[in-house]
Image 1 (cartoon, helix red, strand yellow):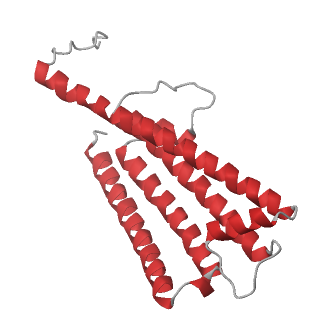
Image 2 (cartoon, rainbow, N blue to C red; image 1 turned 135 degrees about the vertical axis):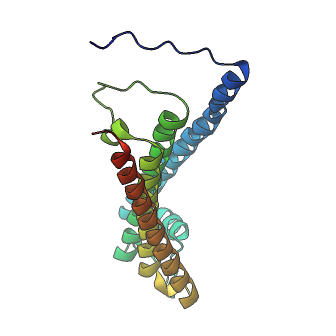
Length: 202
């Protein structure tokens, strides 16, 4: 019959306590990312307001949108057209995806590297957070970066007339590099998980 009493933990040395407590130095970094998240929310709402105002005929809002997305054309833009709408919507999706990336870094990073959030049993606990660790977080961040890169590449191709061939080729090459990097990270994580599983006693 096994002893249910857990083994006593040996006291930590002052140096070990100091080193372990140093993880709290990351707290201002995560708080700063929360501020950056708020800035993205404000930017999203401003762009959305300009889009709605432009839809109702505001030329000032339309020009603000055109300037924001970097859209240029030989003919002056006096009304909201499909290309401008598409570029603005892609820009809004881009903000949302970057915001999702921030949430993963803030919540997942704090949970992994600083302290537990004790969300077990909470009805709003994210599904991905229940099994997050440094390896899983790395793969999810890589996939999010690919999604953001895809949106930027799509925006560039829609607005291709305002970019040189060199820029188009460079952005495509960067996106492919992101894809290959994510595949390498996922494959490495799979190898490490398989190695860890094989070492466990059966």
